[in-house]
Length: 144
Image (cartoon, rainbow, N blue to C red; front, side, top):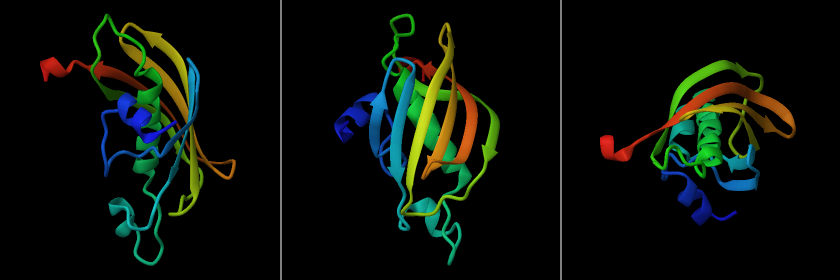
């Protein structure tokens, strides 16, 4: 899918747009991809001479993929900005370096009213880098 499609599903914009490509999307799953660069602002100081993608950024990739997954769902006819309401069971299993291809797999586990519960796996070369469970809802932009 193109950047235009990503930007139509997600309100984030550079430098905080953290998904390069949607590889596959179904009703309950999404597979996205991202390649980080050494010049990304959050990598530059993390760490000099040994650049790593911060774990919180890997979580944000999963959150953005999840937001795209549920963005096509209508919540009582109201659309809004996706906001995270909970992070659970976050595990960091592998360091991620700039230049590595990061695959983000998110599955919608449950939806109750306007709350969406998801699980995510972030992998590099098929090896788990991060896993997490999270929930999100949509903030009504007119109420902000």
